[in-house]
Amino acid sequence: MSLPDYSLLAWTLIILSTYLTGVSKGGFAGGFGTLSVPLMALAIGPIEAAGLLLPLLLVMDAFSVKAWWGHQATREVYRLLPGMAAGVAIGTLTIGVLDEDVVRLLLGIISLLFAAYMLRRPGAAHPIATYWSLPAGIGCGFTSFLAHAGAPPLNLYLIPRGLDKQTFIATCVIGFAAVNLMKLGPYLWLGEINLTSAGASLLLVPVAWAGVRSGLWLQHRVNERLFYRLIIIAMAIVGVQLILKALG
Image (cartoon, rainbow, N blue to C red; front, side, top):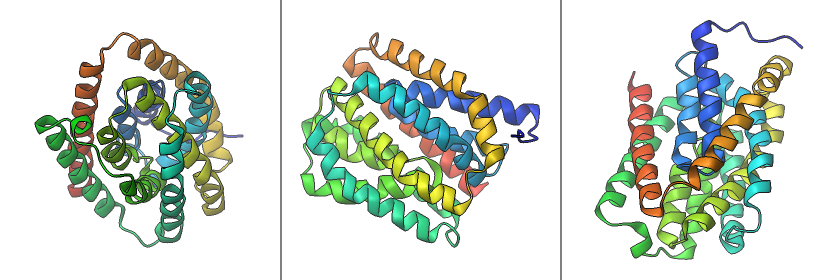
């Protein structure tokens, strides 16, 4: 099993991205995980980055699901699953013809609009109807399939549902674990995961584990109000990063 011939800069960005994703998976400011593929894509191709990251996401999901299982809003997860499956299916069928920069631009705009809305009026004070779980799930599955960037659509639905911090984190963890499992088959079929990328993913497992443990440690030491502010900041950073990448 050979390793990709990446530059020192590429490996540095990949390691940093893996760690940030682990921190996010551990439950600290979930929006940070969305930065990973754009950050890696500064040095390697976005599709290559997505293929490299998925096996790591599955490993991190195993750690984080074990830590958070039983605290999730199970009904919310069930509401999201059909849309997520549809979004993954759409991504599988369109990935070869879709302009990734257009997707990045739209996702970046949505992220900034989300951050602006949350700054003006916290979503928990304005509950959203359950039927929005379908478009949110489709958006999450689709953007997650393309760039592991499903946090904005999921947050747009879950935060206005008024969940407490622990339930919100656990529901996100279980939801993303489900959508990542849905992506595994299509990624293998499309060749986005191969022996070379799998070797690099295996090498990065300790970094992923360290990130998850850091996220678990941090989220127990951050109050709920500050936690949501960190999500808003993370979403704004993600939005700007995606727009700059799309227009660059």
